[in-house]
Length: 265
Length: 272
Image 1 (cartoon, each protein chain N blue to C red):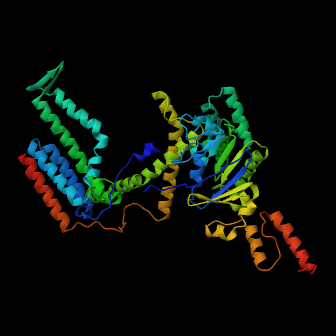
Image 2 (image 1 turned 45 degrees about the vertical axis):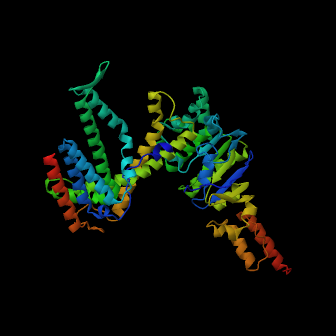
């Protein structure tokens, strides 16, 4: 069903590049740093340098730039809205007026900068999911949250929840498609009608979907217990995270870059 | 690099047939039947139901789906109604029938699957047993009074009694001349007993198409495909290859019994 084909979540592109081989914790911290940087810079040169850094990472990751840019597509409307809002709403030296709208130089530069900021944010963060498998990602999050255990953050449980959620997204989509087909075979129509009619027509899809999800959750819990799962206590890992020299260098570079660019521009 | 799910499938299914559709997992059975009511459209080729071209944009698929009822695998996973009545009434209501007619249809459909209308209509379908849920789900399709009934492994996951019961109901409907049946199954015994025609699929194509007795004569080829033949048929083949002069085109226990008696009598009389 075309409806579900367009949804790609955690679109991981397997590879063996320098970026792929970094410890997921390094990549998560790096991504956070990038976000911080993008909110610190406020000049043309700042954005240019940040864009350059992202371009360098894309190059290192050996991921086709086309794929990174594709991540912007769903954001197109929001991007357009951001740019035009700034373009028309900022006061300053007018470029031209038309009826009641006034476009100013300040608006133009703010609009472009905001748009670029948003675009860079999305591209930068999508690099994380493009180069890190979901399993590695949750492992990384668990690793980073572990120190928080002492103050009551259930690191392992959160990571396990994320892993399971990610694992079951395709299953749920498949199931939704199957139920839709079954109801369509009984004459259901998911497209036509007004808003209320359409919302109502979702009941035959959503009720079974939830019922099955709960049933599956129960079964999964039993299956996990049957295989000896007792939570994170004393659990060892098949693949240990390894923070190596490469990660130290990458982090040092990231911190240095953010400090210099963020503070100077 | 498109993957082709079905290739060169040419079939004409006549009114009143009971078609058994068998094949290995992934051979294209489910894909094929979903073309028959327009849930899937062929990328090339045509599908006709009663002379109406499903691939034509102007065809009302809703009308086709009333005519070609489809019971998916584990149909009880698609139940949603607050009550059994509501769930079974879904199809007839979508067909735009009046409430009186809907009620008649629900009553009739629940009767066809052997459920007590008065006792169950106000129950939530979720509190029924597995076998009952399955029957409610099948009733939900029958309530549209389809001329063709497609069933995708209708007995999967049921206990022997429940599955014999459901198959009995399906056979009764077919015998009464109410529906043409197309049934996907992995049970060679079931199709041997019930089907008037057997279609075997492999790698998205039709390999055999004919009466069960003819198809099950291809024991070696069927085994090679990861399928099989009914156990009695296999037994007769084995006895034959060990020298007992029995016919091998046997499909049911009764036939096997008669044939064994005949063969043993021949031997006792010393003619062999």
